[in-house]
Image 1 (tube, rainbow, N blue to C red):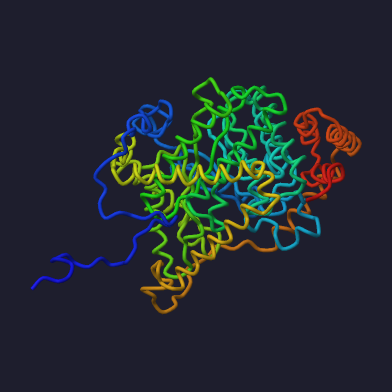
Image 2 (spheres, rainbow, N blue to C red):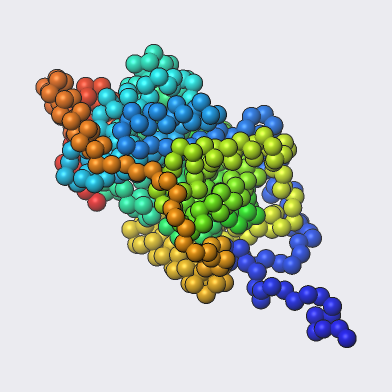
Length: 530
């Protein structure tokens, strides 16, 4: 006798959805009628299938490992270790005081110096950080926002001291202040002056550092705060629109700076949704730049992105399981066509990664690149009924958000009205409820649990770092030309009160060994704090 399911096994769940609550059909067996036009060819508008015609058949993505801790000397040692093991690009993590413009001897820095990244107080620290590393031979990504202009100036000063041609050095500063107001919190100044720093950087780099990516508009931290894939996509692109609007309003031609805009996305566990997200992002940005901003250069329409596996998905329980999560996420980034990738380490739910964990994370990328076959053809999942359907649905839902944000007056107004923040908080709450109800299974956390294990050897950064750092700062201040430093800080204050570009006086001050905190405080006095 047949069951009510006519001989079919009952499905495991009443409803199958992606993490963004997009319903998953039992079978996908067709593409929409205009699929060929929407998908296009790799390396051609609208870039759904990738920004380059040959993708990884030409060269693999840049394999970065986000690193930085303690002092510049310690971080320099880690960079050299990773480069010797096959890392093809550096990615600098800065400590919290550096991110929010405090020197290591400031009272606000107590307990935080060197803890979540490297402490950089002056050009002297930056010189130590890149000692023995040729900046013409590596690309460097710096995850820095409120103080991005200052850290870029320090990097440029090091490059010049090495004799590098600035037209030839390449890398990225994150420089995405809007998402700090939404999801992360390391802002200093009000939005208006902060946006001026961003556009001043655009203009200065277009003239002096033509290969430098002047901004990496970040959905990563938006996703880490609890956003869905749709929200990550929509809020990131709406922030990008705001930056382009600000640059155009400042008198820049869109094609003069748009080719150096880059993006930074998160990669979660839902492999197919993540691949579709990246494909939708490329198509949406191409159309935004062509139709909204009337860009003429194809390079202005290309969405190039760095990806990082999701820190928020890592579990403190059964940490070896994190290796599997990171591998799946890294594969999704590659199948989705990233230009560079960082893989998190298995122990990062507990501490900064050990050297061994960082090496295993790097080896994960290398195995995918050289052994899996995923890099052997362009857009391997292109034409998949399921992936193309998800790509369309993610785009449709993200465009709906962009319409709402436009009606609110754009990204800055939407942030001021707490629209992003409220939407993200509600999504994070729903996700946590699904975990608690076991509608979403997290292996080792709410199912398949095991007795608590002894924690593995973990990396830690002691308080001695601050003592050593403050000692170096005192010695620097005693031997530098104080009058020259004071004059250079006065030049920054004058520029901040006027309309001139801030990068030249900041670079001049950096070369005189003014500290990061002194420069940030000069701008605080001019602009106030948010």
